[in-house]
Length: 356
Ligand SMILES: *[C@@H]1O[C@H](CO)[C@@H](O)[C@H](O)[C@H]1NC(C)=O
Ligand SMILES: *[C@@H]1O[C@H](CO)[C@@H](O)[C@H](O)[C@H]1NC(C)=O
Ligand SMILES: *[C@@H]1O[C@H](CO)[C@@H](O)[C@H](O)[C@H]1NC(C)=O
Ligand SMILES: *[C@@H]1O[C@H](CO)[C@@H](O)[C@H](O)[C@H]1NC(C)=O
Image (cartoon, rainbow, N blue to C red; front, side, top):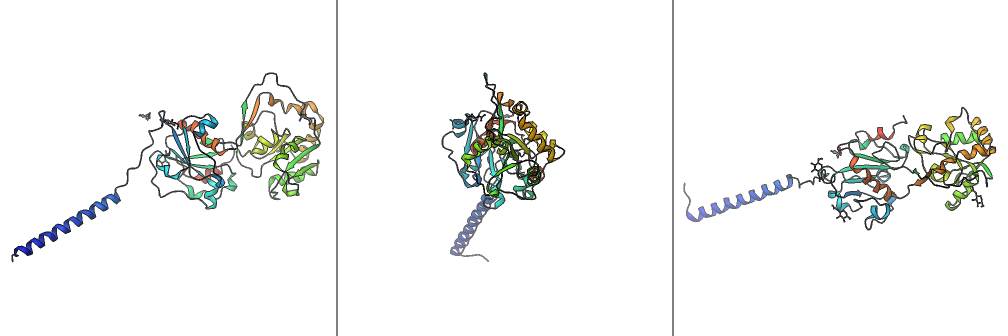
């Protein structure tokens, strides 16, 4: 059976139309399945280029200015670009996620975005493990850690010592102006905390002056250091006992306040690794809290030995870290020595590592 001319033309036109529609569909499917090219940034920065660090969300929702070349202008760290615009994700060498907001659910990881090859995701927290929430869900996601831990990929302690030989340093008598033997500042008192038990035993042996909200003796921050300076000893008791968890209670309150710290926290070797030699008294050094109390009483009467605990000030200066920008800029100093390939397959286990 043939077809007449008009029928044939219509048929041909119909088939042509179908063919075109098919082509369009195929093209559409191809476009959707073939991924948009993922940038490869892995080779970009081992030369002289800038490292781009994207902070996905600001810690505690408090943004700071990133205008200008922040890392250079403020900290003299070169080739370090700190940004917080999420649109720069495809260009970022490192994307930093602060854990608190993830743990509270106010922020989420952009797991749906294709990760550029070579981009590292960094988990950042300055909290002790007990306050980090459940980290089990972060298996095989992060490439690096930013924490106070000495073994973090980028270690950002609460404070550190800088060697500073000061010629003609005048040795002070640190035992003057003291009106209290032992002082403690505490806001959140938990009866189950190790520090509370030690406090109870200690205060049964020697007078302990307590400030802070627990005793309804709120201390405005401007009064903190002056008050501590009038104490022989300051209880730098951490609220959580964890590897390397040594906070501003040591670096600022004790060392800058000018009272000799009695520390409770990680084991002595963790303190020795970072603190000045002969600059603190660790509660673990004593067989009992009673003995600790007796020792403190003796030491306060012995000006010479008491002052020996401050001899470190001749050589060392305490540096505090308080600004998130400084911590983030520090990443760039270590960028080149980060391992080429690393994945935290069990972040929870890493976070709960014990002191060794
Ligand atoms: C980075 O290093 C690799 C090998 O060391 C080299 O092949 C590559 O050219 C370098 N890239 C840049 C941007 O310097
Ligand atoms: C690095 O950043 C600085 C300051 O923003 C800029 O002047 C310079 O051109 C950048 N260098 C490269 C290689 O991108
Ligand atoms: C003791 O107090 C006096 C007067 O307030 C002050 O000048 C001095 O620096 C203080 N000494 C120490 C070691 O804190
Ligand atoms: C970062 O982690 C991801 C997810 O596990 C992994 O695919 C990627 O290879 C890692 N990148 C680097 C630079 O280690």
